Image (cartoon, rainbow, N blue to C red; front, side, top):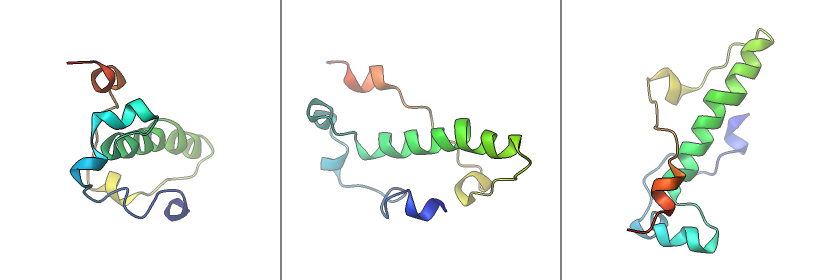
Amino acid sequence: MLAGTAGEGLFTAADADLESRELLRHGVLPHSLKRSIFVGTLEGVVFPGLEKFGISPACPPMARGARPRSPDLARLTSEE
């Protein structure tokens, strides 16, 4: 089910130009932030919702113990 919602490259390394903070000025999220938001939504919304109805979610990245940091939009959008 998740395969259709995440882009093919969401969990792969991205080129430096896809990680640029300058993308935010154009309304585009850097690749790592997209991944972090996606995983955070799974962990904080989707999986708890499934568990509430007795469905045990299984997601290999989480099963391996991967725990990405929550997105820090203030850090990404602040001017340095």
